[in-house]
Image (cartoon, rainbow, N blue to C red; front, top):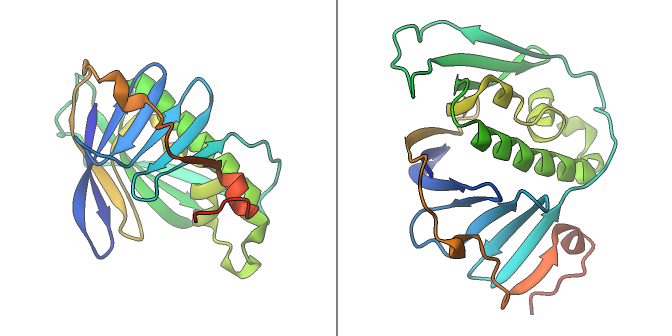
Length: 215
């Protein structure tokens, strides 16, 4: 189990929780959360549960082959300044900065070798979101295409994960998050990974096609 502090512009910082098992990865706001996102690592499906609307939306892995509307030159560099930073589980954090077409996109403090299974789960989760993003990418007007946005949401999602577990990350727009605690041997209740059956179930594609009614 991992606990983060999330940062967004014009929003007070807030805590989130991430629980990872061999089969599942669950995002929520902590103990007692009724709303959550669940990634079934075996089925390759992400479920978003909304307790107020009583809905479960599923995002399945898509297979869409598209290319960026212009060349993306993706770069990264390791920055100095963490030489004296404390180790985590005996591993040293390193600071990386990622850019696209010369524009700085985001920074990450990563620890190579820390919680590799969590990193694998995060990668699988982001791969599904990136594939789904390709489904609607061509709906974005050309004048809104931005190298950083395209790389971060669609064409190079989570490229920082190959450098290890991100204990801190922040983008140039002010969004970010920091790891504040983790328990490697946390025993999660199996009920946390159950999809409510008594809610309205639909896929994100059915929603896009106007096949979902919330009456």
